[in-house]
Length: 128
Image 1 (cartoon, rainbow, N blue to C red):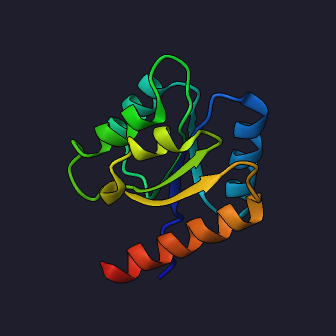
Image 2 (image 1 turned 90 degrees about the vertical axis):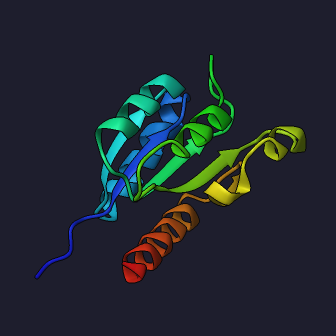
Image 3 (image 1 turned 135 degrees about the vertical axis):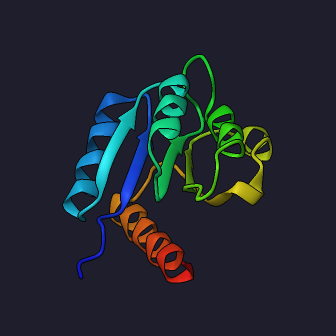
């Protein structure tokens, strides 16, 4: 039996960066949804179960911290969260680390991001 492809949600306001992440995840076999704004990400999270949530900390209107906080309200299984940020340490300190698998600082090595996401998915599936 073939395993279901992993599902990721990419939350990034920079269109070019978001497109790069989406393309890279798809090349590795992920089903990918994307969101430019936090409220769109929250809607997507309520509609579908994701294996991985990649979220930029600095989003317009509501921050990535808001998205992470909303994940707490989801019924399990919750997505594994990877934060991407270029923000200073005060913004990073606002994150509930119990919900976050990794915080990666810009500039991001996309190959490393994908490899880490694959590792997270494999661990999550092995734990089931």
